[in-house]
Structures are given as structure tokens and as C-alpha cells.
Amino acid sequence: AVVSTQSTGSRPVFIYLAYQTPHGPYETPPKQYAQHAIKTPKRSRRTYSGMVSAMDYGIGEIVRTLRITGQLDNTLIVFSSDNGGVMAEPACNYPLRGGKKSFYEGGVRGISLVSSPLLQKTGYVNRNLHHIADWFPTFRFLANGRKVDKKWRKKNKEIDGVNIWDSISLGESCRKSVLINIMRRDRYETGREENDDENETGYSGTKRRKTQLRSIVESVKNTIHENYIEGTEIIDENIVEGTETIDENIVEGTETIDENAVQGTETIDEN
Image (cartoon, rainbow, N blue to C red):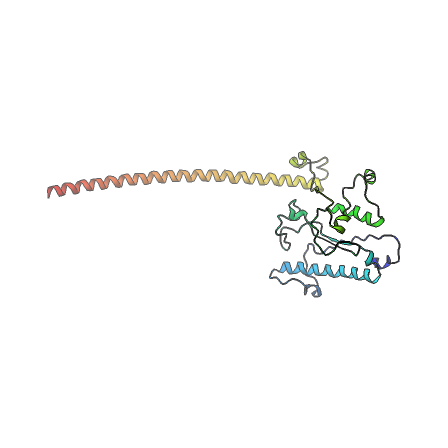
């Protein structure tokens, strides 16, 4: 409905559509979508695949409406994930390490698809470095043709993204680095921030609980290490005691053999 009502307008239109699927809770979609799921013995993967099919159908309806209303020829469609999959079923980030909520590539690298007749270069895989914050200055440039220059950045200092239109349209690199995370060292070590007690349920409280969890893990590690040392000492004592017992038995057995040998020699001599 939104796409159809904007077909006669002269101003640029931006539509942000955030699908809940595929996302937890993972629920089996209707049969018309489930039948397109991948064939796999894992039920969770089949369910996930069916949810992707349902999302694909919804996106297809939007594209069809854009085509019918004549807007598709002047539209840029960006399909992007916001993070890697969860490090458990049904997601799979192989061969990347880690997943959602981690700073490994499996968590911070996502897949995007860009489709538009406005692209000068199409049908290729773009491996340039991009950041999710780059879309805003890129969309701004496409909406009014104005680049995010130094003068504009000076006025809007909070903008971190860069215009990546030349990267996705021509394949030219626009970035040399990407900032993944910033955290003050003292806050990382203590897990506390100002008003931490008042914000127990917020981000600060989450970091505080993470710090407590790290302390518990270290305590468990130390306990395991101590038990290992104690167990090693006990084993060493048993080995020493066992060795002494064996040595005593060997000595006693040697003495018995020597006595028998002497007695046998004496008997032989007498004979």
C-alpha cells in the first residue's frame, strides 16, 4: 500500500522494512512456504529455510508492486543482514569463526544484496569493505545528488559512514578500515560505568553481569587447577609407595632365590 501511494509523487521515497523472520522464535511457516525449504534431516534447518522462503515471498510482492507502478527503474533495493548467525542451530557461519554477539568475523560480517537499474556494474560479487553506517550517506547522495563533503561533515560530526555508491556501482574501493568496537579499558576491566547501580537492567548492568560471570569462570578454573595439583600429588605419593613395595618384594624375592641357590649348591657338593 505504501509503495502504491508513492507512485505519483515527485519527491524521493525511503522505505525501511525490517522483517522479523528469519529470527527466533523459529516457527514452522505455512505449507506453501515450507514446501520450498531445503531438504535436510535437521528439522531446525528446514524450519529456518521455510521462514526464509516466507520472507522471500514478501520481498517479491514489493518488487512486483514497484514494477507495476513504474517505480522499479528508478529504485535502489538493498537487502542486508545486521549480523552473523547465532552460534547454534539453525545458523551456520562456516568457514567464519564465531557468530552473533561476538567480534569475530562470523559475528560482524554480513551478506548484502544490491539491485537496481541505476548500477553501472552488475552481476558480480563485491568484496570491498563496507559498514552498516555507510548506507545513510549513500542514500542521501542518491536522494538529492549531494555528496557528504567536508563542509557537511563539519556540521554533522556524528556521522561515521561514507558514501559507498562508487564502490557498489563501479566496484571501486571506498574504505581502508572499519571500526568494530570502542570500550574504555577501565570500564572493560571493572565492568562498571557511572550510575551503574541505577542502570542495572541496561547496557551497564549487562556489562557488570558479564564481569561477574568472568570472575566465576576464573574461580572455577582456579578450583580445577588446585584439584589437578592435589590429584597429581596423591598420584605421586601412591606411585612412590607402590615403587617402595615393589622394591621390597624384589629384595625379598632375591634373598629367597639366593638362599635356595646356596642350599642347592651345598646339596650338590654333598652328593
